[in-house]
Length: 114
Length: 115
Image (cartoon, rainbow over all chains, first blue to last red; front, top):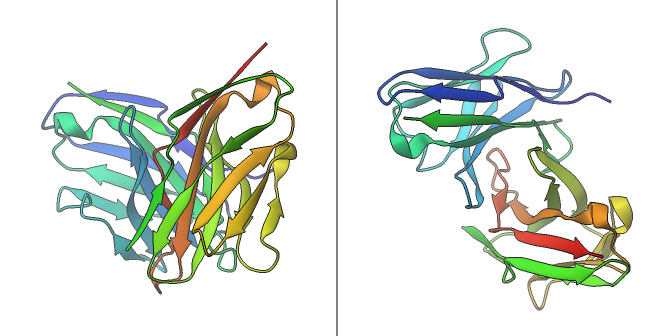
C-alpha cells in the first residue's frame, strides 16, 4: 500500500541553524501539507500546498518557514533560523483532489533544537 | 474559524469493555469530521470519516462514530476494546473554505486498555 515517507526520522540542530525536512507524498496525490506537534500538545496545521503554490498557511508559518516541491516527488519544509520553540514532531500529509480532508500522514520527523 | 474539543485527556478502560471518546466541534461552515489514531512513535492513521449522508459511520478496527449536528458532536465508540487499541485518538474537523482544506485537531484522548 502506498504511504507517505519522511526523512530524517530525528534531526538535532543548534539554535540559529537552517534545517530542511523532507517528505515524499503518495505519487498520485495533489495536495500537500505540513503539521507540527509540540510534545504533549495537539497537532497544529502549518501550511497547505497545491499546484506549486501555498494555498493556505497558519499564523505559525512565518517568514522563517518555506516549502518547496523541488521535483516531481519531494516536498520539503525549510526552517531558516531555528529557535528552541521549533522543537516538535513535524508531520507531512497528502491527499488526492477528490478526497476532501482524507489526508494520509507520514511517520513524522522529530526536530530537536538545542 | 473551526475548533475541536476533546474533553477527556485520558480514558482508562478494561479489555473487552465498551468505550466512548467524546468530541465536540464548532464551525461557521459545513464540516467534515474525522478520527485519527496515533500509536506510540508512529504517524496519524485515519480511523473513520464523516463527509455526508448517514450520521453513523463505521471505520477500521471495529470503531464507529455518530455525527450529531444539533449537539455539534462526533463521539467515537467501540463495543469491546482490545489491548492493541491503546493509543492516542484525535478528533479533527475540516471545512470547505476554498483553501487547502486543512485539518483542525483536538488535543487528543489517550486510551489505555488494561487487562
